Structures are given as C-alpha cells and as structure tokens.
Image (cartoon, rainbow, N blue to C red; front, side, top):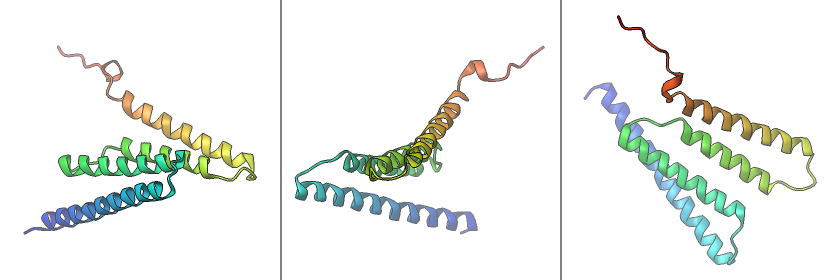
Length: 127
C-alpha cells in the first residue's frame, strides 16, 4: 500500500467521524427542541448547518472532492444564526460587520457560479 492509499483511508476515517458528529449533533438538537417543546429560528438554522455538513460529506465520499460553495453556504448560515442569537445591547457596528461578511460570502458564491457560464469563457479562434 502506498502513501496515497494511507492518506485516503485517513481522510475517509476522518470524514466518517465528522459525519457521526453531525448526526449526533442533529439528533441532540432535535431532542432538545422536543424536550423544550419550543422551536426557534436559531434552532432551525443550526439544524440546517448540520444538514449542510452531512451533504458536504456525502458529496466528498461520492466524488472525493468538496465543492467550495458548501462551506460558504454553511458560513452564511452560521453568521445568520450568530446575528439572531446576539444580544440587543451590543454595538450596532458589530451587526454591520456581520452583515457585510454575509454580503462578501454571497458575492463569492455568485462569482464561483458565474465561472460556469459559457459566455464568460474565453473564445478560441480555430483555423
């Protein structure tokens, strides 16, 4: 067995640990919502983060690659959850910085998606 195969085994083992952690976190959050008999937006966003992590793992195990948009969507969701959970007495500039961070990440996703459009690809002159 060469080094690449060892590294691949370690990668798959690590990703499976992350998957188990995401499933346990998801189930724990569902249990907490049921026990409190209350569902808040922050709880739903946290569940969405867990689902996105599981989706990212599924894509990684199927294709052995991670599309960069998955972590970016997770980051937007995490910052949105942070905005929702933050106290009302904090400095409003913090909210502006967090909103600006979401805007930058959203623009990055748009730029990444635009690269697949045909009219943006360079034209080749074949003779």
